[in-house]
Image (cartoon, rainbow, N blue to C red; front, side, top):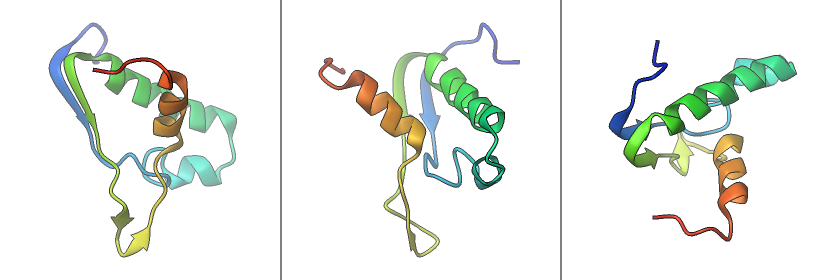
Length: 84
């Protein structure tokens, strides 16, 4: 339902492994489940006309957490490119 919509700002909260992508998608070990989660991230990221914030806390529910693989993929892709 977000097709064609754009927003001045987009905030993605909880960009952590087991949350985004969700643990069920990871545990299912199904490529299509992970790809569906990746499409959701893509939609979130591409709907902004202005600012994009992505949060990933260092700790979640008293556990040390890993940043979402999607954030790490974006970081690798953008490495060496200026980001404003």
